[in-house]
Image 1 (cartoon, one colour):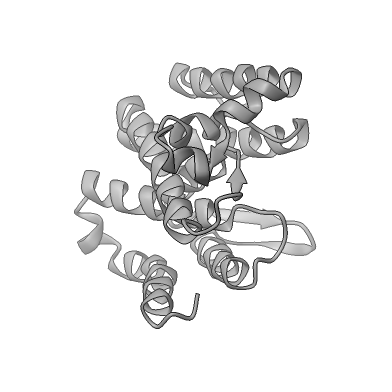
Image 2 (image 1 turned 135 degrees about the vertical axis):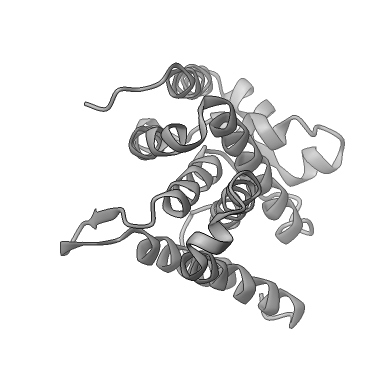
Length: 216
């Protein structure tokens, strides 16, 4: 079992406690979920509070399980303070991108820590690109950066096709937040890991181009 830092435990505990409250109170869930119409009406706190709510136990478990593995990587490289900054910047970046892409959909809503967790995952990949990750149905581990790029490309597809009941925009925005914040903290990565920095930027550039062309 990984030796979890207190910062990770606090984040996980906050997610569990807020989510349980949401499971038991639909009024609480509805008040703090990400809601385009409510945010546009001035309830900006939903941009953050929605990141601590989850639809069900499996949704909560998947996010916390991913955080469990990748938070220690970020903390070991940057410390707990910068880890927390990356977490919350990624959470907010995910909400911002969702707000941008769905601003004309007043009934759009979402919950979950996926944006923040994707930011931590992308930060971990930048900091330790030699990581090998396994995935179901693929018998051999793959380089972490390959899976990171593939997932963001899938997110673009999901945003374009509205595929599945998944917050693709929040995932993508969170990854961008983690990517940018990590590079701000460790600008030497531009020199020491130039290829990885460029490769991880490809999906971001693709999304920017598609949006400018009105294709997404």
